[in-house]
Image (spheres, rainbow, N blue to C red):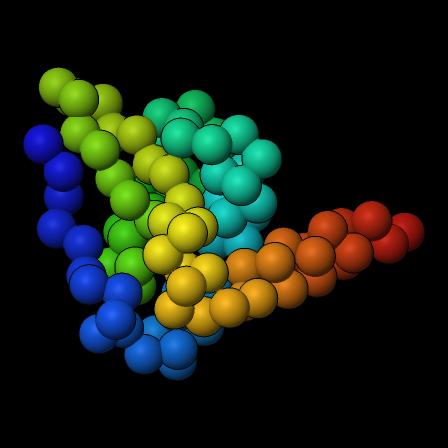
Length: 106
């Protein structure tokens, strides 16, 4: 069973950018890019379970991620190919910016 996800062709850029305009969601984006499909509860995001669920829902509803349900577990993956086709270069630019920002000394 999969959860409802939007057709990316119908998702405006502003919706995707809004979903990715949060540090926690950018960390999720990076983790999914590096790890591939990941069980939701296994990412240590430093937020409560309810907050983590909210962030995953925002990403799914914006068309950024795909959620696969397996019993009581939820596995999330990045819709990289679809996003790259709809918004060329967007993910790579965001991930590069995220990597550059985290590499800078505090």
